[in-house]
Length: 125
Image (cartoon, rainbow, N blue to C red; front, side, top):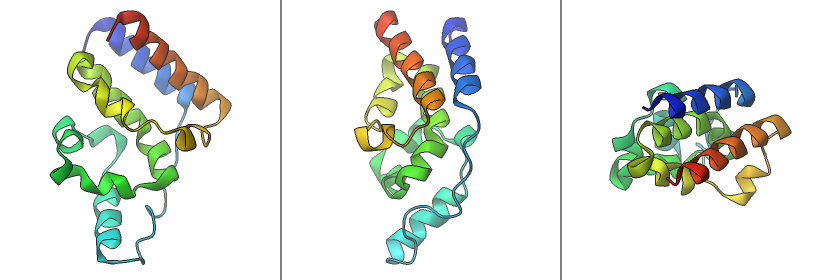
């Protein structure tokens, strides 16, 4: 990760603050797939997400079951992976940005995210 990319990640993490791990992801009692997705997501944190898992639908399918609370919880990990190699990884973040999810962020969290998005725009990633 470039020094400037690392600096914007650190600035994001400070501005975003801590996001609590949800007690459950999605609706695990709905069906077996939902229960499996919940179990897989409970075993992960934003710090241990990896590009391979997020870029390969057959490996990271369960992220589609994370819900809004899960999205807020994992957002720092999505940003970390995107900034690790923006030319190749930025899409991992961008495809997970939905207006419904953005509206669930607090004002400081939204401001921290917008700074990252403005940074990648200015850098031409």
